[in-house]
Amino acid sequence: ESSPIWMATVSAPTNIACIKYWGKKDAKWNTPTNDSVSVTLDQKDLRAVTTAAASIKFEKDRLWLNGEEEVGASDSKRFRACVDGVKALAADPSKWKDLKIHVSSYNTFPTAAGLASSAAGYAALVAALAELMSAKETYQGQLTTIARQGSGSACRSLYGGFVAWKAGSAEVSTEGGTPWADSMAVQIADENHWPELRAVIMVVSDEKKDTSSTAGMSTSVATSTLLQHRIAKVVPERMASIEKAFLEKDFESFGELTMKDSNQFHSVCADTYPPIFYMNDVSRTIVRIVHAYNKWAGETRVAYTYDAGPNAVLYTLEKYVVEVGALMAHYFPSPATATTAAAADGYFNDSTF
Ligand code: PMV
Image (tube, rainbow, N blue to C red; front, side, top):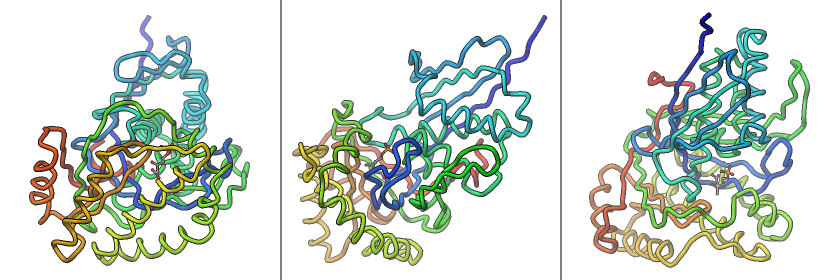
């Protein structure tokens, strides 16, 4: 007797924050201490491709990452939050309630090297599950509140363009039967707003980072006084300024705010006790080259940003991509520089799925 296997495959891009998320307000709900905002990159280079399948024949939930099974992953809090969260929004919840889910996901870029692989991974997981079960949001942004519980930054990858993650009040409500906290991603501008914007990715190292973002954030929240200043005094103003800069396509301001925020995030890491170092000597050399080049140009043509790893993401404009690529290739003559167009479609306004 045959029993069907239902399947859905989606692809989700990574996103690179301009104003960084660093700090959890509530560990259980994975709500942040501050707002953040990022550009969703396009699907060409940096993405996760994820298939979710369900069948009455499956005995338990299972997860494969890049072809290898993650034993025990299906019991992890993050995976459970995503699967159970989307199941609750299924168009026909009774159909999926007792079915076990198999998930297979591939990254097209280094995992856990500070290129937001978890953002693409959990966004793709939630999007694949949502496709599979024809999940319906009861309010806009609800799927992003589920993705957030996989990895905070993942909530921003469900939309394309320029996407903010609002910290929200972090209060938990059980309205509608499923508990949730009102911290969600919001699209500020879509992927067509600033088509000239580009991101150049410089893979400085593809090794796994030694301090996970979760561990790093918790030590920073506990020990860094600079982080408290950042949350109270710096981020609110920067969020308003960078949203304005993006909407006005003002690269000068956008670039300056992005670089300053990357620098402050890594200063918070240095202010954490014991300190955390994600950037290395090559990362810092790139910072110097960027400033020297912008000074020579008499304007901000390129802006760096670094997440929890040594790899650089350089935001620039289409007209400078070749020059920036040539500049970096001059100092680092290796084939490891990839360019990618920025501001792609996300799950919600997209025709590629
Ligand atoms: O959500 P996580 O655990 O991937 O943390 C992301 C933290 C940063 O990449 C450093 C900043 C950000 O906003 O993406």
